[in-house]
Image (cartoon, rainbow, N blue to C red):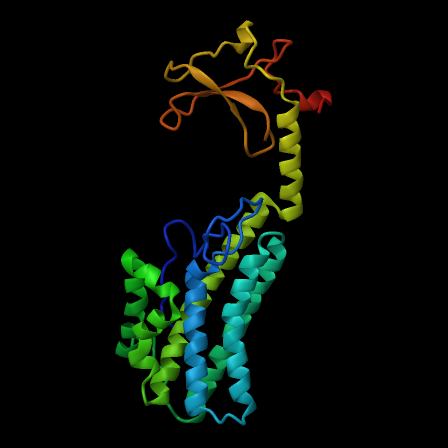
Length: 295
């Protein structure tokens, strides 16, 4: 089964969304887990052009009374809509997000087989990955990756359609079908990378319930932390950084097993990452507190 090579993921991760608020990615309210922003996802953009192209293809070349017509349109629709729903569900359930993105991936795989069947049943040639036609289609996606000024336009489905119009509006159904096959392969690649990233985040950061519990523990530690701003003993005096000698400042750990606890950090951060433990009233640094059973 020939495949078109796919666009590589962006430098900040494999097709990750700016999931910071509404569907446009705006930060309307800070939440524990980001969600939304799916319109900026390359996988969603490609899935949308696949849906639009499939609706046009089926209306022109597939009998509307045929079950295949409805099945292809519904499979194409399922791709983009499940990506969007999964992105929104990320606010409270990483498992739901993963499940929906996998549904999108499976729907596009079903659609891919329908296009391959169409070409085979009618004796049309399916493009090889190195055919000139396939290479021309892939150039459009590569330009999107290399031209940041063009990226914002692709959140607009009309502008995105124009980029592929010469193939999607072709009078030869084989050209349209082969173009959509190339786009499906690109979307499949991007979704595979997206799923891998979601799985990795779940393993490293846990699900919503785990993150909610960790945030609550961190907040309780922060509330229970004594106020050291008015202390005049030696432990309240800021030490010098052991690495660069600059004065240190009091900081609070935001992540990890010691989230909510305080420590001394270099005032020259991020250039210098020197740290010192914060001494407690008994002269220890508190590092063995958990071993003694204290909260």
